[in-house]
Amino acid sequence: MNNKYDKTNIFSKILRSEISCQKVLENDHALAFLDINPQAPIHVLIIPRNEYIDFHDFTENGSSQEISYFWKLVNDVLKNKNVSESGFRIITNSGLDGNQDVPHFHVHLLGGKNLGRMIN
Ligand code: 5GP
Image (cartoon, rainbow, N blue to C red; front, side):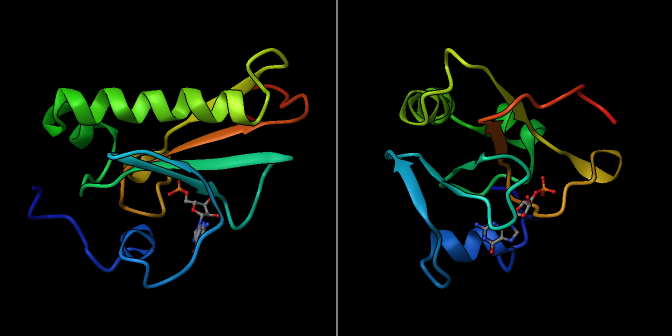
């Protein structure tokens, strides 16, 4: 595991059930829950259960099984939220330029309306 990982981050607390979340779906390696401050009618966060800081950390250091279960859960959320036909956007923020606030790897799944252009 990454020794720079900050175990006090909010998603780490959600994973330890120290704070609650509105769970959407889960599997052995990943959890999906509603964003507390939704930016679209559908705004789901998907996170791996293990400690990865960002996309690069997860992709470099995650096992094949963790990575496949993670993306399988993203796809399951698409189906659960009925956005595979209507469309959606998947975003991951990383580091300073990406303005990542919570240092536990996550993707945002947004949908439920036309989301406009990618960067305002
Ligand atoms: P980031 O900027 O790191 O990509 O996004 C972090 C996201 O986490 C934000 O969209 C924010 O609304 C969400 N968030 C922050 N704190 C909480 C929380 O306690 N619960 C939930 N469900 N989402 C949170």
